[in-house]
Image (cartoon, rainbow, N blue to C red; front, side, top):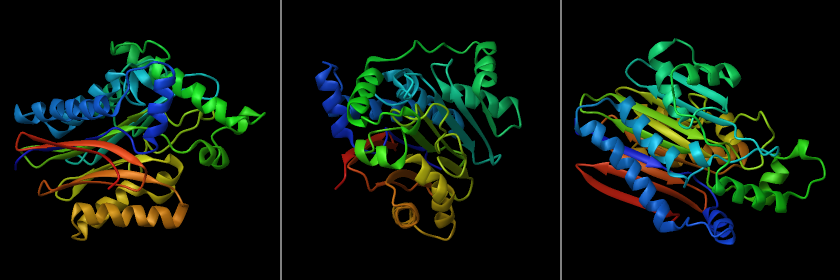
Length: 317
């Protein structure tokens, strides 16, 4: 099997991210975002090219995006309505059919690394809050440095548009529609030379969310899913819609029925839209190493490496 890795940098209204960044004098441009997803895909591919596993390739690809300061994950995670960093991540190994989601994290710079550690050290599927943070400290993971300029810029952008007297209701559907879904979540899917498949995601959650809100990212079958012999998928977009539609397990199910990745992704988004009215994106790899990046939002930066060749995209065609 020829190894393949595909990544995304978040589906949504990226024009709003660029607008907010320009106002604050931040160097966040389409070119840098495309460069960021390409760098992440290459980092994952290097793991595969050196004989590494799909799980480790997904971890490294996501960790690059978490550490870049360009995406809503890791160091530049979006802030809640209370101005807090609260991060989620998850990863699934298609070989063992095990998954781990970590949620409401404050401590680690790279939440995906904690999810990966727990995948090998525990049989738990979900772990969160101060208990997960304590484990990240005990394992010696690097500490998060606090709110990033990108996150602060997006927080101010969202707060200006919210104007809702009672912040307890921030993050509801009305506010999300008012703000427009902005780029959120990073994700990766990989297949290694042994045919093993993995998928994972990491996020700071929606901008200006209710503190404690959990989206799709740490939940297997929603934000990410992988099965050896079938395929893997990682989602991004409105987390509540992705959760209610079980998007990634649905897409992988379509692969199992024989659909190609592009068709499986489009059918999954059609069902999501019909059930919830939400918008999303999904990246997919099947057991043959075929791939697709499908989304119904304004944009979703993505990159794939196959046969050592990098392909990337950004805006909806």
